[in-house]
Amino acid sequence: MEKKDREKMNMGLALVMTLALMISMMLTAVPISALADSTGTGITLGTGKIAAGNKIWFGSYNNLPVLWRVLGNGTGNTAGSGMLLISNDTLATTQFKPDTNSGNQWQGSSAQTWCTNFYNNWPSGIEKNAILATSVSELNNRSEDGTSYYYKGGYSNYILYGAASLENEYFFFLSAQEAETLFSGNDDRKASGASWWLRSPYARNLLNAGAVAGDGGVNHSNVNSPLDARPAFNLNLSSVLFTSEISSESSKSYKLTMKDNNLGISVTTGKSASRKGDVVTIPYTISGSNKQNGTKAYVMVTDKVYTASDASALQYTALIAGSESGTGTFTLDSSITGTWGTDYHVYLLAVNEGGEKKTDYASTPVELSKPTHVHSFKYAAMGATITASCETPECDTTTGLTMTISAPTNLIYNGQPKAATLNTDYNTTAFPNTYTISYEGTGSTTYN
Image (tube, rainbow, N blue to C red; front, side):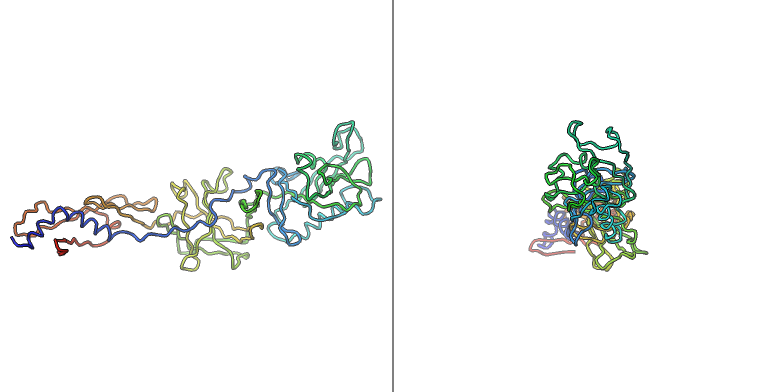
């Protein structure tokens, strides 16, 4: 028998593994680099995570962002729809009333005018529209039976404060009762170490109005005294899409993302989103009169429809710009599993970012339909069989995912060719190429 024939006959046992390895190398997909999630899941839908004592950045004064402290639910007519906030620090100095002969009532006072001007000077826009007009009705008779006035302390040693109603007011000072009950104590009431005005008149002296002393105690002061202003207001909760924690702060604080009805985003007409593995590509168009050069496209993933009261955000990230203008990609977090649109919901938003301590503005979230499936096959060889599996979830290619190479049934040379074979029922989506079986003999001689 010639040497060449012996090479063909002796290749039998090595043939299967060699060919399997060669085919595996031919089919290995080019790896897709992971795309960074720019902000992770650091948002809370609405204001559900915000509690009394937390702090929120909102607006500015003298070109500096203002930090507000949450006191609790809305007051007066805003109960149920608002959240009561007070500036964390005092902002300015004002007299309650310069003229000591004009009484100590809140209505018509310089203190009330300061609050009115504070609102009037607030730039028009979404933030200003989220400041609720507040009305609070308090009794105002002059009896001292304890039913119509707020008493601080016991009957043997009390300070008596008169009523201080609010009439559709956007910013205001706290009443003596609010100041006494919405803080845990004197230390909790302190602000910048200064004394600050309340809106309640001191009932026993028309020259005095309620105030918080520098030590945090609720007291009173002469109406023409220059004390600090510490405004409060009720925030419209329905205007807040979500809140974000500011991690760089030494103490926990939050910023808001508010809904902008003059900003929009949609999947570009005539195109659709696609998904390959966990990478989703979205062609998008930003619209609206508040569209800016820096407007970004974001994706938000929630466990339920985002308007549900118990919905939670699973992921929030800016799209990474694609090679084509108006196209972006993001990587769905590996912890998010199940069926798109059922077990989780994906939304597209246009966002104008304000900065770390300033409000962001976002379009109404638009839910993305399940994207076009793009196969992302990986291959594993074991023995004479190569198995394909699609890394893109919810793949509908489920059969013909194996390719097996079989050696000739009889390797004894009889002068006729003895060819290895491939199974013919493999799926051409998973194995799309035309394959040629090569035979390698000793001395690296190759035969087809």
